[in-house]
Amino acid sequence: MSRNLTQTHAWFQKSKQFTPMGVNSNFRYWDEETTMIISRGAGPYIWDMDDNRYIDYRLGFGPVILGHGYAPVVEGVAEAIKNGTVFAWTTPMEIAVAERIIRMTGVEKVRLGNTGTEVTMHALRIARAYTGRERFIKFEGQYHGMHDYVLFSTASSPVGALGSPHSPVNSPTTSGIPHGISQYVINLPFNNLERLEEVVSARWHELAAIMVEPIMGNAAGVMPQPGWLEKLRELCDRYGIVLLFDEVKTGFRVARGGAQEYFGIQADLVTYAKAMGNGFPIAAIGGKAKVMDILESGGVAHGGTYTGNGAGAAAANITLDILEREPVIESIFAQGQKLMDGIHDILTRAGIPHFVTGVPSMFSYILGVEEEPKNFRDYCAGDDALYEELAMELIERGVMPDCDGREPWFMCYQHDDGIVAQTLSVFEDAVKAVKQ
Ligand SMILES: Cc1ncc(COP(=O)(O)O)c(C=O)c1O
Image (cartoon, rainbow, N blue to C red; front, side, top):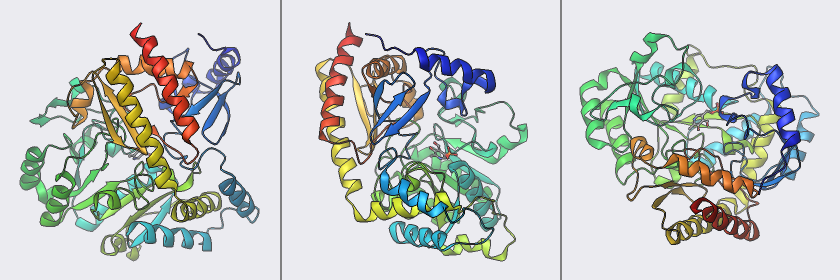
């Protein structure tokens, strides 16, 4: 079986004439043969330039929680932007979005932004300004966006560059970061209580924040072990460190109130983006009033021409309204659970060792492992090449997860019974093809 990709390839070649690697984000480049150009999306589907249709489980790296081109969002945004989009003043729509985020998540104050990168960057500044400290802890295999402070030991780093788990080293994910920046970040293995306690008790006076994706959304959805997030909360309380949940992927997706609600833990600062706007650029920093109020003096910089812009704010207002009123979370959990169970069954019957990770609205599976992976190093022990081979067989048959096992499968409101059944049937065929 082989799809016709003639037009898709031709458009990709054209894109490469104007744009480095032919893509506007490095993550969108797979290789010369498999990098796609997409013509449109509708509900759970996307189409390439040759009109091949795919059931989409990437959903734009997670934001599209209601489905592509979801009419109430698109129509609401279209209506809103007729009245203009940026005024260099606050609009009632921004106020409505902040009020909704507070009601849904339990944060006490909110500032809006446009992207995950932007809000994690500002959140770190707020944490530093609040504590008067400069360094922060993050965890290996966690990704917090494209600004310099966080681009060390991310999910793009080779495991061999991370050093020993007993004394991890910061591995820069990219060229172009000033050497000295590395001194401000301490990378530790996720779920490693002993190492965490050791570092925090020795260095707490330097630490502005512990920044964490509560679920490893950039490493196959590896889960926090019982007690892990509680320990982060406890240590932050004990030492006056800001607990910063990066909920760019988990926010409004793993529960209406995000990971804070799912795990029953309130952070001091929380960053949101993706699912809050169903694919429109909108993001937020929320947090406890005592921390967020550091902005009240005007002495801590946060700004942006487009923060709270009309399109993003309207999209968030409508998306969050739908998430609050309709059983979106219930639906994506029910359908995602069927996929998790079905995939587990198929892989088990095929005799392929695996571990299914994450939560139903954002899950994955790691191949070639017998035990639950607990951190990025464990993830890397899995069989990435087999994952990719299987993913490519799925894509060939019209089911589109990411080919990279680090990126979870995302569910949307329009993945229904039929689509899930079709996905599992394709999965079964893809596994057979791989076994051959
Ligand atoms: C947890 C997390 N934080 C931050 C970001 C950066 O968000 P953005 O791509 O909107 O800048 C991402 C992107 O995938 C993410 O997964």
